[in-house]
Length: 196
Image (cartoon, rainbow, N blue to C red; front, side):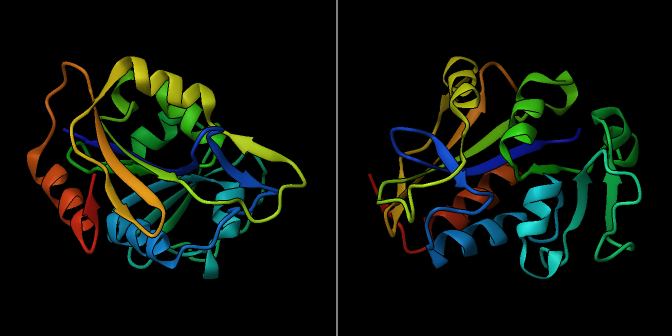
């Protein structure tokens, strides 16, 4: 069974995840946590999020880039694929391959509301509690995604706090969750964190 994991970092109080297509904070430990969680996994992300990645790669992960731009150029055609729909993505995944949803806002919305098979089973909800860098420009938030999470998921861990980011795991209500996936993520979140 494919386990789908969504992971984001949002600003406390307003659920902002970006300003002008960039993260409005700089927290190396949060970036490392993200990379550790998705390392070696199948990762789906939108074109803008893909373009924001240094070197357009995430270690040994296989990337699926959502875009409708024909002729879009990828960095690595061996480990990266263009997809235009959830059906196309599902066809490319093996039955037992897990999938990690890495944003941006439209991609999170698509997976929270889209095909049942590809709705996240696990959400790694990271909440930044500090100040935003720059407050001018196009702000992107995931308020509707957080509303869906609050209604259809339940929080199963305490907050793992590190460098002004509180991370917690939420799971879909009434769903079986693969324990090995859950344990691996919890081990990563626990590193150097203080429980709250």
